[in-house]
Each structure stands twice: as structure tokens, then as C-alpha cells.
Image (cartoon, rainbow, N blue to C red; front, top):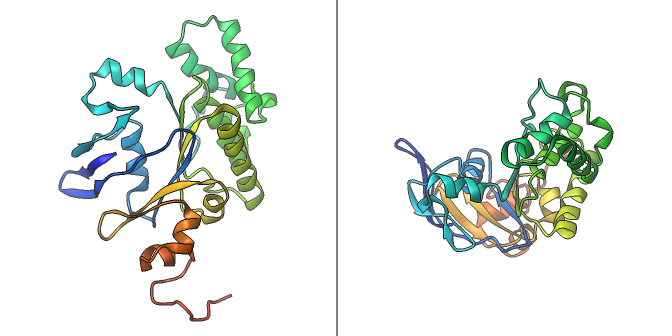
Amino acid sequence: MRDVTLAFGSKIIQQNLSFDVQRGSIFAVMGGSGCGKSTVLKSMVGLVRPRVGSIHIDGEDYWAADDARRTEIGRRFGVLFQNGALWSSMTVGENVALPMQMFTKMPPDAIRRMVRVKLGLVGMEEAIDQYPSELSGGMRKRAGLARALALDPDVLFFDEPSAGLDPIMSSRLDDLILNLRNGLGATIIIVSHELPSLFAIADDGVFLDAQTKTAIAHGSPAEMRDHCSDPQVEAFMRRERPGDEGEPRAA
């Protein structure tokens, strides 16, 4: 991202954003509630056009390309939205098959086999004929991830992947994300404020501030926690309020 400003009408969401995501990294977009994390992610996947600035994919300016080229670039992305975003009227298998039906010429029997492969990657092969309403929250997240993997993306985007999950399921999802990065070589970008998950898996990131409406820190979550001198970032990473350093915290 280069000098990106995101806005809706006269409302500035984030401004002057510049950062790089390295291939093969797990990159975290962090910050408090309402700072614009999800809007930044939507701009990166092509859902929100920047007011100013540019977003480059392997050196190519995404928003300078025509519609057909942007669609082609977008097929390199897989996105897991916060609630899974599964079609409730379709089975899990049909949800995962949909991108293949839309964007490939694979015959139905080959798509069915590939659906089983994608569900197998997330431990959900047995749920192929179930409907989203029959699944737990964690299972819906994994089914949504299988669909995000349908077209073998180079880059995976996660919007609050641990939201609504208990600590055990959240830890399992963290392990799954690491396995996808290490096994498939995917670049992973995560929007989250779940600090235990971020400390466990992210090796780079950016911290967005709601007041100044820009990025005020760069680096891994652990680096920000241990070395950042900005009081807002330090307080967030240590789950304190600015100015509370050294004061006893409630149990």
C-alpha cells in the first residue's frame, strides 16, 4: 500500500497508509475497535477503492487495471470473512464448489473430488453434505476457509478469524493457519485484535490508530509489545489503558 487514504463521503477512515506485505509472511492488521481494520482489508481484496494512493500486487497497480484484469488478480485471493459468509441454502460441499463452478471449466466429478480435498485440508470432509445451520461456529469458520482455498490462492485474507470461538477452537485455528502458510506457502493477512492469536502466529504487521486515522507502528505483535515507545500501542499490546502503567489491574 502506498499513501492510501480510505474514506466514505466526507468521513476519513484511514489516511496516508504505506506498508509492504512480504511473500510467505503472516501479516497482522491491528488496532482498537472502530479504527478501520476491516475497511483496510476490503481495500486490499478489491472491495473498497482508495480515495487516494495505490495498492500494488507484485508490482502491479491493482486499481489502475481494467475490470477484467482486476478480476483475474482477484482470483489469486482467498477471503475468510468474520462469520464465514456461507450460503445457508447450500450444503458445505456446494459452498466450496461454487468458486470452481464460476471460475474454472472443471467437470462436476472433478469439482466434487477437489471439494473433498479442500475440506480435508481443514478437517471437514465428513461435513460435505451438511448445511451451515447444522455446524458449530468453529466448523463454519473452517468450511469458509475451505471455500477460500478453492482456487489455490496465493494470498489468504482473514477478517477476525478467532471472533466468537472458545480458546481451544481459537488455538486450533491458529495451528491451521500456520500449517497453511508452512505447507502451501501462502501469504496470509489477518485483521484481528485477539492478542494471544497474534502473538502466536503473526511475524509482521501494522497498527492502526483511530484518533490520528493512520498507522502508528509497524512490526510483529511481539516487537510492538516489547519495544514500541508509542503509549497507545504499548497499552493495547499489554491490555492496559494509557497512563495505567504500574497501577494494579483488576482481577
